[in-house]
Length: 311
Image 1 (cartoon, one colour):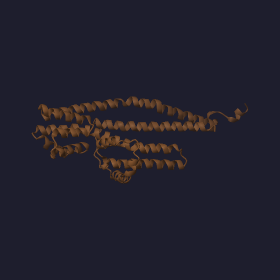
Image 2 (cartoon, helix red, strand yellow):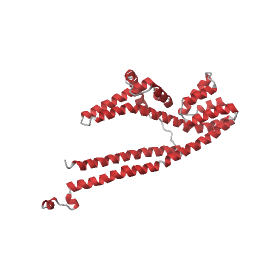
Image 3 (cartoon, helix red, strand yellow):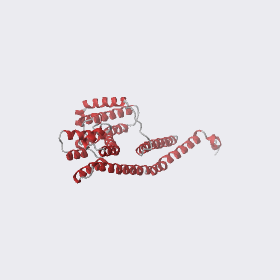
Image 4 (cartoon, helix red, strand yellow):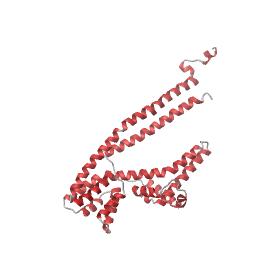
């Protein structure tokens, strides 16, 4: 029993080390993302991996069959909130509200199953509760993250779109043909939203109402700024080409300033991790190794148990 506490000390040190490595990995990913947004690292176009797409399609196909059970066990879910987040995320993989409830129940069941299997092979029963809670919360966290990433991507793509619109309009092309021509060359969520906006105009929706519907479907501040400027400019008679050019420059300046500010805040966070996570872990690891060496190999540190027996 007296040998247990050095081993526990080593386990604590290893746990702190693993936590520090995970936090450093997370900060490294954030750093790469910030450098990409600043243009310091060029984004290479890669072919989409088909395997994750096939796995996602298979999982969501299973989820459709679990929709009735998911609807019955909502567990702290709101239809209105989920509908809003699905719209902001662009309904990834064709996900609907019913399919999401089935997917949520599937994650819940998987967490409960894995936790039960771990408890059967000797792990603590608390793993069942932890994995059950993880299966319940992870789908909502994933959906919120997908919605946030999509809205952020819209804000990133807007300045390039507005530069192209400004040049095309200055060349004498009307607004709607210019937008259709530029949208055909684009990719990503901004293209999806603008294509839907053009479809609404084609079926007879008034332009100002289509602008407002586009703004209400999203939460991107740059997109909202653009739409409000276009509405106000059309009412006041301001040239649209100058509106696009001015807003593109302002959005780039605001985005670069925000990214630099976030990058500057990373330094103090790394210092806190080093001070309160890595340093205690290293100290515990060294102390634990010294204690184990003292217990199991006293001759290595110049101590002999035989000499102590005489006292």
